[in-house]
Length: 242
Ligand code: F6R
Image (cartoon, rainbow, N blue to C red):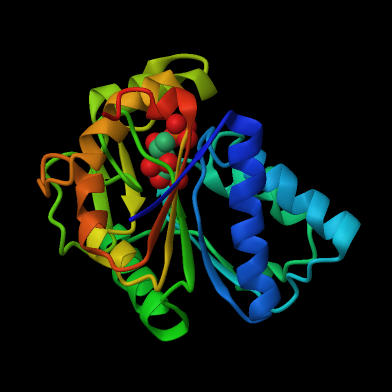
């Protein structure tokens, strides 16, 4: 795993955006895996700036998002569909028909999972997958104990994850109980992975990851076996690494 330590969140965001832009500039038809949550927001701001100021071209790019809550309408303000529209897709020249996000309201969620995995197989896998990390080590919504071979599936969210995400809702009770998520096996198909971690609250997870021990109780450790992972981490999140 290549590790890049930055002074702060702003530098982390700029560096992450640069890595994504390099991929898109190298191959205009790139498939990019995207994440939601607080961490990539700065990265998306930089990508929008790059589009406006340097004309980075997204017209042929395809995207796959990691996950979506089960039971939220696509236009629910906290759905990941809305998150992506508001924070990236509406501000760059991406073709909306090439942006894939699991449908958490599908009539058959099981079929939706199979279909999503099939799409990743047919169109992907991502050339570059962007990831955040949960305080409990989750990637996508693969909570501790998830199989490292798992594909897209429905996951029960950990209480700690619902608590962490309650900041985006009016209360923790409003945070859905389940999500559709790419599995760890799906994520590992990506040709390259860009993992971001920022802030003191991620320091324990990053020090655990960089101990280098693979453990299904710590989902991010699956990345240790992937040949092309770059971790961009700010000093606050890196502070417990010995
Ligand atoms: C988001 C996702 C999650 C987040 C993780 C960190 O699509 O899959 O794994 O990356 O929960 O969230 P933040 O960035 O809000 O700390």
